[in-house]
Length: 63
Image 1 (cartoon, rainbow, N blue to C red):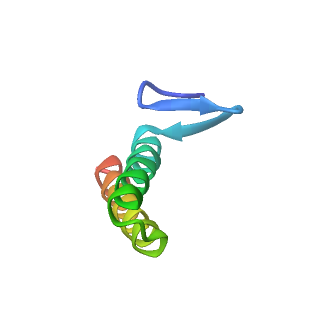
Image 2: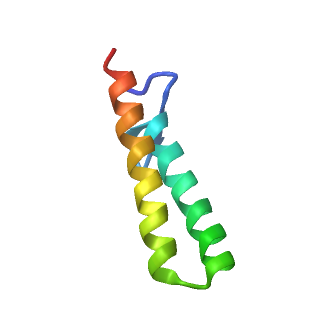
């Protein structure tokens, strides 16, 4: 079962904060990759931001 804050992807419910973290991570990856032309910097920055959003979202979802 999915709630209003979950989306079914391939039959698996995904909470909204996880989808948001993935979308923001991809956008940051593209933006930083285009501006710095350094994939290492882009990947690490995007991974860090996505992780912060993912963890913060899971912490607020438990309340």
